[in-house]
Image (tube, rainbow, N blue to C red; front, side, top):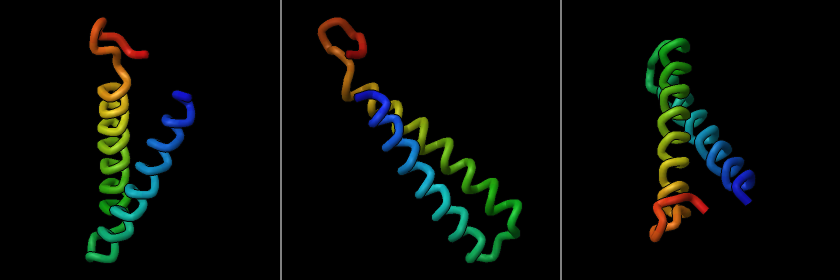
Amino acid sequence: MRSVWTAVIMLGALVVGCLVGLLTWLGGANPPNAILTAGASFCGLTSFGFTVFEFLTRDRARGEST
């Protein structure tokens, strides 16, 4: 089940990263800066998604992941 959630988190971050890059480019940024913005957005959302997933699935009694 973890692999499914990993795929969902990564796919969601990829879609949002692409949208951020496209909106940055349409907003007037040059292509290299738009690509860097998209990459930063992807990395940030992936980290945030995995952190939230870990928080929601850990065993609170032992402090471990399930």
